[in-house]
Length: 156
Image (tube, rainbow, N blue to C red; front, side, top):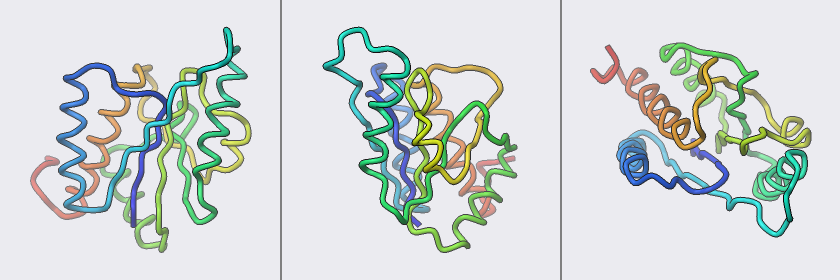
């Protein structure tokens, strides 16, 4: 199963890029993994939150293949412990999904069309983090889930 993380905009802070890169390199030991960075919306003078969600959503939906299993990282999604998330991942791997796509919306979330296209929603925390931090938190948890499934010592 291939796994992707789709996100809006680049990571600006070098230390976050470096930390993210460490987990990207570790993940390929377990599964093909790719991060897809969609550019920030430009060309709209003072866009409204709804315009931003619509434009970002169009980009996601244009890239989404019919066979992709889209999971939104969303504050209204289901919360998991690390062990529960690893079990969730195992079920997805066993189900025959070819490509599992996790998506992070922009600052205002997702358009209605993206919500409709998604299969599930996952919340990382009831707390709010900036998007660049969420990328790092998510990829670390994804890596942790694979180490749990393999019975490795990373997770105590």
